[in-house]
Image (cartoon, rainbow, N blue to C red):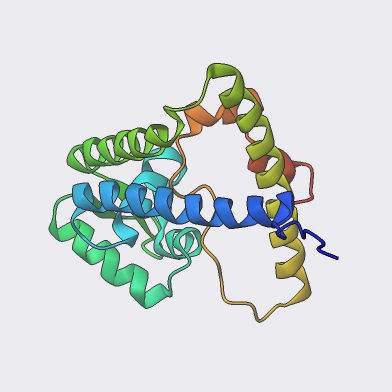
Length: 196
């Protein structure tokens, strides 16, 4: 007697995991190539300039180090390269004990170009989708980001020796995210006490 077997196919969940992983790599590679080409100073420079443009202009090297997930010495070297290129400058505090890093006009223009290149490179992945599908995807991505933010906070609180990770929002465009209007899933989790 012949019994026809149906080929085993991966579950929808496994398939989603696999294609999300593949898509993440492609989108990240394209985004990183686009923004690194503009900054031309290594992989951390675009994130540093974008973070300063969006929320950290005038912050300290220590704050920038935390945002980027770099060591203090690595961040100092990055700031040195950015300063040499005329993109940032160090400004001493009145008490002489602290130094802030601020974007120059040239740095601000370059940061805006980085954010625009990021937006265009990621948006190209959405061209094949209808507006309704994009709306549904945006809602799903908000849910995923919120859950990952909570998980990340729990991991950090459970292990005090964990290597500092870069902030999720280091390359974000806060206006596009709707952060000031209360639409940012990461900020919403953080401000409710469940996040970073």
